[in-house]
Image 1 (tube, rainbow, N blue to C red):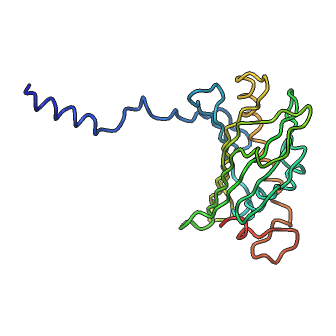
Image 2 (tube, one colour; image 1 turned 45 degrees about the horizontal axis):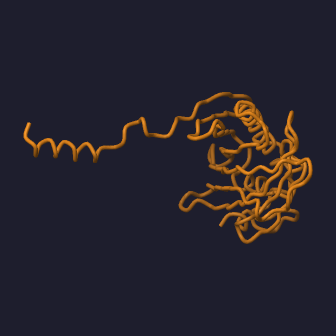
Image 3 (cartoon, rainbow, N blue to C red; image 1 turned 90 degrees about the vertical axis):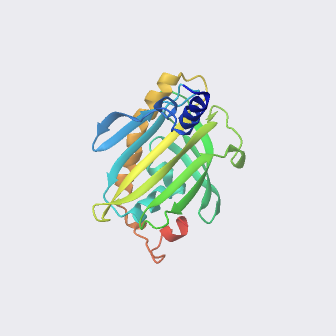
Length: 226
């Protein structure tokens, strides 16, 4: 083989897509209960897995957005939530503090930044992304472990002609403290279906029927997602 041919083959090899070896790990379906699916995925550099759950909500997407944006009242309906309050709000950006009491371990707390958007060109599609923002929240409390790793998102997509919503919740979080990775993964996997169930129940309340800013006790979804 001529030297120039070897160079050509080498250049072509470099231009080809990277082999699957370098691709992200695939999601693995681990449970399906009440039509709520839970997936996990390995994350490089840690024993903590990413977790994703999906479920169908019997309400239009804007109404579901009203529910998941009702942060001040999470302690009334979200699993294990003991305290929840908005610290700061500027348009579609919110800083939110929460304290939770998971089973088997001590209480945890954290502050996150949430950004909600309406997906351009896709009517009724919304996204809310969140990330750790402890520097914007209160100082630590005695007996409560501060969570330093938390990020994720909500995805809302119209389903069944727009009358229902396909809701996706993704989170990557480490509980902190001395909790082993396998226990943290088990807790995360078992907890997330309850979040979908909580939204299914809460969305029935009349206060979330606000669509145009005229209903009382409800923030218009158009003010939530820009």
